[in-house]
Image (cartoon, rainbow, N blue to C red; front, side, top):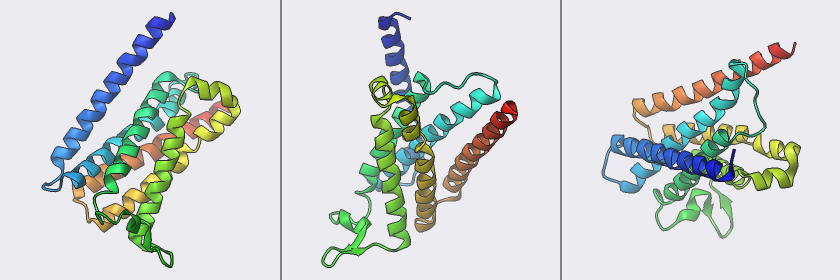
Length: 214
């Protein structure tokens, strides 16, 4: 494929993914009760990011189920991952301004002198979310051909598999906040459905892959 055509296709795909991300965020924002704009935006970006994360984790097993080759890295899966990272980091940035405004450090520490960790459910939720955000940032950093060539296939894939740790931390963060904020049943059902769908396709894809090798 000519480089110009390849670049145009990537550009169109990113514009399309950006549009979908904005649409999901807008719909989730509209579905969140007012009046706190930052709280609504935090929830909206969280669910948009979670949907993109679920899609990115569906793509690999879906190839396995269709009997197709599963490449080390594909442009579409990588581009979905890029927007997953963008939404996750945006959610973190907004979320850190929702509670304790002006005292952001209290998300993680009860006090600074002497230093005392926020060893509560609130603190657990925030540390889990921070861990997920840092992993997404790392994954976003390596989501390019330069990193793949520089790291080599084996090291790049090792780092890319940290996506699963990011999912576990995201789930822990989300569950903790569902309980802390006593979210409406509709949000809980959407959150649960996405996690179940990801777990199911991963398990089915793994079993299918093992069976095919036997």
